[in-house]
Length: 317
Image (cartoon, rainbow, N blue to C red; front, side):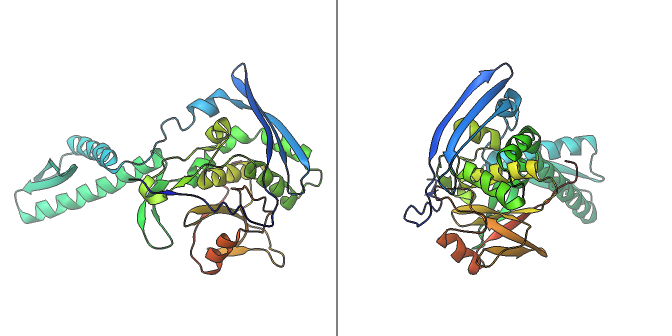
């Protein structure tokens, strides 16, 4: 049975609570028009409208699904077998044997040296095929802060491959934010995402991505869990600020982002791989500004119970 975790809702906080005043979407030719109204960190009403293509909404990441180990192993073994058929082993033969819902490879050959070399070649092929399978399906190996290992959605590459669909937001948002600096732009985006209704986060390890919504799908459904909202926020910020370095930060039951700008007194930041990141909470419903975290998030950071993944610009935007 999948264990369900709830992100750090923190309803009883002194912070302003999110309130999405209205949301609608309607078709326009090969696009959909999205309309939003919400209250920002100062309880001021904000609004935004923009178009998203049907391709972004319904085609991008259409193949994305939760990781299933048995299905993945069979797909990987099929590709390994195909490669071995195309380039046969020297002095040995591989046999693919079903065993306890898995497939094992047994090698027989003329001598021990041939068999040993064959196993090395197969291991190399399997590693390459597995890496390709993970990349093509947006999976990655992941170790939690308490050292549990498993497979999760590759949030960084989901964000990277979503940016082009959200570039049209740059002039729209910059027109809304009169003082065009990183902090004001980021807080505008944070309030927008924090006001989108929240859905529960399933354990990253046991669910392997079940319940995750890529950025465009999150907007279509008008809801998202912590990981989904973090990925949407990173995508929008990358579309707005192509060259700024960011980080995705994971703690137990929650996720948030970091932006590579200096922190002010009293603000939360981390250092990761030699870069300082100012932290932010995209999930809501509490409307935290850039640099402010929920108490549980702050505790996890102070106790170093987090995993950070750098999201650097590839320089192509």
